Image (cartoon, rainbow, N blue to C red):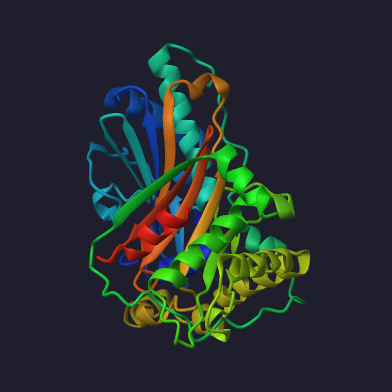
Length: 394
C-alpha cells in the first residue's frame, strides 16, 4: 500500500490529532497470564492479514493521509489507565498494545477506525494468540482481510438529503475538568436479566439504558430550574444499513433530547417514553441519510476543503474547545462482541472504554461478552454523584 486517503470522519479527527480525546480502548481479560512473546507473534500475524492497521500518518497539503508502516510494533507491559498516547513514541502506529497480568489492552485513535472496525482487529489478535498458546492453528491460512478501506461516507452520500442543524443551549457537567485524568467505573449485569427488565418496559436494552442514563443526570447533577437541554449522542454503526464492510470509520451520530427543561418534574417513565419515540423516529432510512449527509458536508465545508492542512490544524488547536458542545454526553452500545466457541473458554470478559473530552466530561461505552453486559463510565471530573445515582437506579 503506497498511500490511502483518510475517511470523511477521520478528516475531522485529524484536525485536533495530537491533543484530541478521540482515543478508545478494548480490554480483553483472559483466564491465564499473558505471554508477551506469544502476543508479539499473534499481533504480527494479525497485521499481515489486516494491512489497514499497519499505517502511519503523513500530512498532505489539504488533508492527512495514511502510508504503509514498515516498523516493528511496540508492545509494553503496563497497568496505565486509558489516556492519550504519543504516536511518535509508538513507531508512529495509530494503535497501542499493552498487557498486564491477564489483560490485553489495545488503544486506538479514532482517526484509524471506529468501534466496529476495532473489534475485527481485536478478535484477530486474541484468536491468533490463543491458537499459538494452545498449539492449535485454525487461522494458519488466514488470508489478507477482504474488507475494504474505502471512504464509504463518500460512496453512500446522497446530495439531496437535508442535514439538520446542531442543538443549542446544551447542559454540560458543571464540575471542573482535570487534565490527563480518566476515572473508570464498571457496571456488569447479566444480559438475560437486563433484557427481561427492558422488555417489561416494552423497550430495547439500548433504549432502556439511554433513558436510565439521562434520568441519572437529571436526578443527580441537573439544575431543575435550568433551561438547558440534556442531550446524548448515540453513535450508530451503519454498515448493515448500507450493506457494506469496511475497516474505516462508518458510523453516524443520533441525538437523543428529551427536553427535560419543558416542565418541572420528570419521572423515569416520562423520559423512557420520549427516548423510545426518539429512537423510532430517528432511525428511519430518511434520518440515516440526513445524518450521513451532515457528516460528509462537514468534511466538505469550504472552511475545511480549501485551506491547507497546517492552517486548519492551527485554528483547530485554538478553537477546539468550542467544538463538541452539541450534546451533554455520549453513550455508545457496541453490541455483542462474539468470539468463536473454541476461544470463549479462555476469555473471562471483554470491555470497551473511551476517553472523556473537554466538554463531554463523562462518556459511556456498553459492550456484551457471553452473558455479561458491561457498562463502562469514563470521567475526568472528581464528583461521582452521577455514577452513584446511575448505579442506584440500575
